[in-house]
Length: 248
Ligand code: MN
Image 1: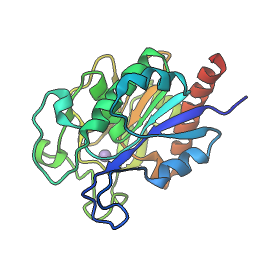
Image 2: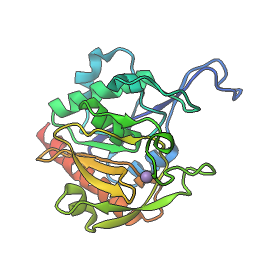
Image 3: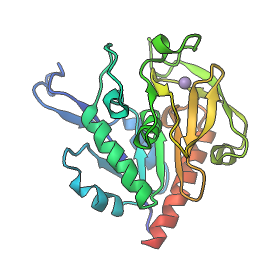
């Protein structure tokens, strides 16, 4: 059987980037860890940059077997009806609106959907949910979810909801996860369900109940030291994608 084709979304570096090769140019890019993560399994990774014209999204989704929503700059708060809190963070409105349409079309076509970090948040926003724009300033008592020194230094435990798909995949009710986010899910869109939380209550995982594989994690399996759960997540996603591939 042909390996499933997995499209992954990308980040953008605006023309203001000071690096010589990038100066004056908008660039689309992706952390190589996502590519290595997909490359380590039996699938065909396909980079999907933000498109400003959304008219081809139905055909794009029809042409793939699964969609990986990657991490990146902040989701645009206007997409869930809030004013942006000014801060030092980069926001990507074009990507936000593009990914909202990608998620909705993937749901319409019952294509497997795997969201990592920002991607987990995007699944919620596309369904009508909202986010904490900045955990540190908006959620009193929350622990640090992003290290100022390094995006991979912070780890914390996450409690996994028994009976969830996530629980079935990982096979345990507690997991130490890495943490590199300053935003998080605030109001959850129906009918999504929360599948993991940090001890401070911050949402660390969501999924859509039912047949379709629609699952998001707030951590970064592609850069986890503890790769057993990360590998299991990717393999579960790809197993659903292979079923879709067989139907095409
Ligand atoms: Mn976290």
